[in-house]
Image (cartoon, rainbow, N blue to C red; front, side):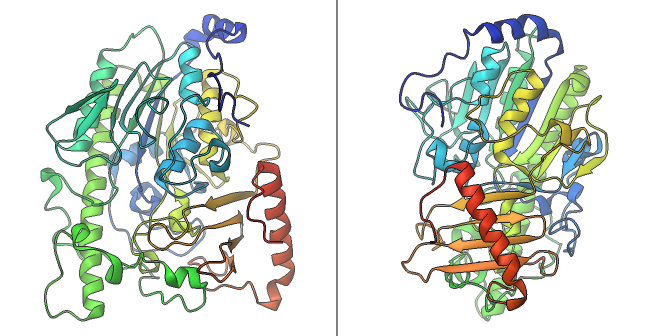
Length: 493
C-alpha cells in the first residue's frame, strides 16, 4: 500500500499539480514547527491538568507545571484523545512520517528501520516548496536507504543518543556537541531558523530525546522537586489479579524490575519491599519531571523566537510525544501496553486565526493522522495510500462528517523487551477490547474494559455475562478494522 516500497521513490517533485500549487499558494502556506518528545505522558503536562487519566475519568494529583507547553494550549487547542497505534518509539515515528500503520510501512518493532524510499510527509512538503529540517531524535536507522529524506538539512542523534555531550549525525557526518541534549537540539533548531530562506515557508521538526530513560536531568534542574514528595497514582499498588496473565507477567514493575542505572544508584539498605518501590518511584519520577522541565524551557525559547521575529501568526506549532508512558500507573514504568497511560499522546497545537484559542477536543485522533494534517495545511493532496485522515476541521472546532469512533492498535514485540506479550485490539469511546494472540508462553487471552465504569482499567469484564453483547459488537468492530486496514495476520478464529 505504500508507494515505491521496493523500487524508486515516487517522483513527488515533478508533477504539474505540485508545481501549480507551489506557484499559486506560496503566499498562504503556513510554517510548521513540529516539536516531538519521547515518552512524555500527557498526565505530566499541566495543560492537561497534569492529572487526567482521560476526559471524564478520575484524577490523580497534579505533579508538575509546564508553562510554555501551556502557552501552546492557551493559544490553540488541546486534544484529549490523541492515540498512538503502536506504543514504541521507532514504529510510532515511522507511522507519523508515513501516515500508515506499522504492518504497512514494515516498521513493527525497534529492530526494523524505515526504508526512505517510502513516501513521507516531509518529502511531499519539500517538493511543494517548503524548506525542511529535522534536528534531534530520528531512531529509524542510518546509512542508505535509512537516512532522513525529504529534509534540506538534518542533524540527528544515532539511536537513542546521549543526554550529555551528545554525538549527532549532520548530513552523514558524525560530530560531538558539548552540552545538554535538549539545549543542543534547541540551539541547532534556532540556528537553522535564523539562517533559513525567509522567502519560503518552513517545516522544522525539533525532536527531543527527553524524557526517555535513563532520565538524566541537566544541571539547571538537578535540584528541582528534591523537597517534593511526588504523589502515587491510584493504581500504584495494582496486583493484576483481575486482568490477564500478560499484565502480571510483564517486567515493568518499578519495585521489582527498575534497575540501578535508572535510579542512579541502589536503594538504601534496610528498606522492605514496599519501601524499595516507593524510593525508586520518587527517584524515577523526580528525574523524569526534571527532564520535562528542561523541554518546557526550550519550548519557551522556540515560542519566544517566533514572537520576536513576527512569525507566530503564520506558524503552526505542535507539541506532542511519540507515545505515552506509565508514571507509576499500575506500578509500572515504560509503555507498550494498550492501556490508557501508554496509549495516550499529548497533542497541543496553535495556529492563530484558524484554531480557536483555549479550546479542546475529545475527538479521536491517531498518530497516522499527523501526515495528512500537515499536507492539508500546506495545500498538498495526501497520497491515497495514506491510512490516516486530516483532522484540520477538528482543530477548527467543527464536527467532521463520518469521523472515527473507534481505533485499532497493535504491539508486535512479543516477550522481547520487558516480557511484554504481543497484542492487538480496538478502543471505542467507552470500551476497549484487547487480544493477546501468541500461544507461547500463553495462554491466549482477552481483556475487555468499560472505560466509563472502570477508567483505571483494573477489572477485566470479558467473561462477565452482562457484557456478552458488548463483547460481540467489539469483536465485530475489531474484525472490520483489521480488514479495512489490511492487517490479516494472527486472527483469533
